[in-house]
Length: 133
Image (cartoon, rainbow, N blue to C red; front, side):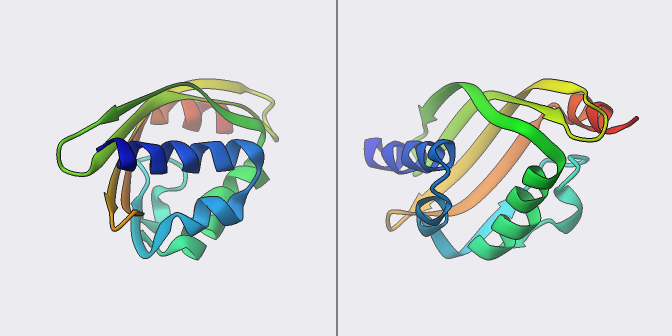
């Protein structure tokens, strides 16, 4: 299980460094990615494949937020090759100027040393409220 946790921790480290090729490369080509219900980017759920995630989630985050980072990260290893990451989203919405410090839980499944699924749970209310003028 430690191997799976290391893979997921490496993915977060890659994003923090801006190394999106490494982040996307750690995903299975057929990864199934789901944003939390009512989250602003859940409108295209499920995202299938790394490019769908890059464009539909991360491209939109970059367009919508300044200084979007994750903080307060804690990783939990489950017994079924799953890794749970908890933390907070931080950023300021580009249009409204409203900041967020929103809780999240990410549930990852790892198979054959690749992330094969992702499920986000988040404080959708705080994020959506920050995006409204």
